[in-house]
Image 1 (cartoon, rainbow, N blue to C red):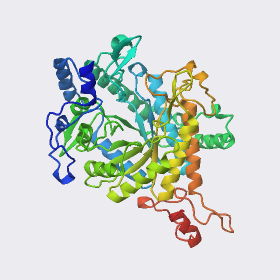
Image 2: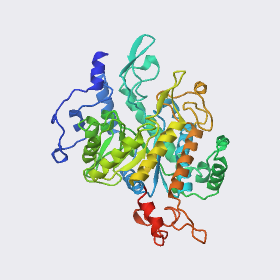
Image 3: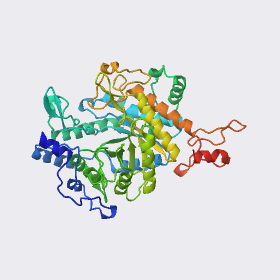
Image 4: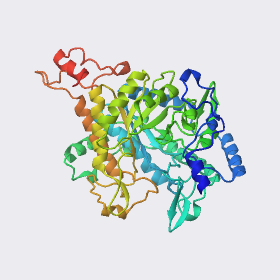
Length: 502
């Protein structure tokens, strides 16, 4: 295991281009395999090299799971979210499990993502961009390559496409990459069929019955009822897929050249984790060359100058919708950290989409040793991040949650459903990080939507009772998110604080 640990944390450099950081203009020519000359962290190393080579060759010949035009459309929608014209709802399992590739579970999962998007649109008038952590989120980074169970050192569980959760299945097995592809294909086939055939009005009906003890239940219930009465077009069922692209040999095998561009056609959007975003690392090298929209997790360890350099590498053409910065700080840290990161992005001159991940920085261990998260901490970080963006004049384009459409799981503490630490044992399913259940995810999204609506609501009303300046979204929206006609007749004392809040 000693050799495995060394390889896990510091993959040997096959070709060291330069020991120091290089400028964007001096970057070497890119190819889908150019990452192999860089330091690669968190990747599984295959003992059976011949088997791995055959698997990767097969994956390179299999049909793509998504289409380039779909990835291009998502990039366009993300650009709109960055301008405040849309809002991103992204969520799903921490790590998908092969055993959950069942119709009922997949249906509840995609329904949850789409329903949360419908909540945002109803309350804020911003059309959603719905992205699911699905059809490929089978791998996870781990703090250590091995762990000790019953006195025995075994490989850490890195997700179903690497090894099994059962102790006897912990060997890193390259043939599981093919299993991951087949399960992703089956998942996508079902989701595409379901969203094409389902009645949007029925599929998007939000169940708020579990929120009865909420202080806002009357308002939530009224909004849910109003939503159910709206006619919804087929566009309301649009979704996109995403996963963390961690196992780069797999991602390379699913990369295809289309015209003059290379796309990762395993998903519409892929992201770099907080542990694999090294400027000179293999993951950044791979990501800089693909045409997909890409995400980057931004945690407390990200330095301001590092962020600027990262953006210059990943988006030198300053393409809108290209890079999503997914901040994950932890409750109480946003004011200090996000302020510097926003300033760094402004100084870079590179457009980004800001997204808040309020779950990954808020993990705790309960008194009974269960890994969990507190709903209150999640909401606190969300509101803190929104406040910082408002204060600095930047735009929060969306949220990113680990959640499940299952109503009965008990993995996160709190919320109106009242899960306690003792209650975690009732139905704790996850193999990795804890997820919000259906009730907690719906409650969180309603609170975010109400906060967004409140922030955009202006007072005082005119003598006629109408607000002097209508909130963006409640009137016709012109290109690039400018509102009309409310802006035209707004008095200066109303307009100025809206544009330049203290």
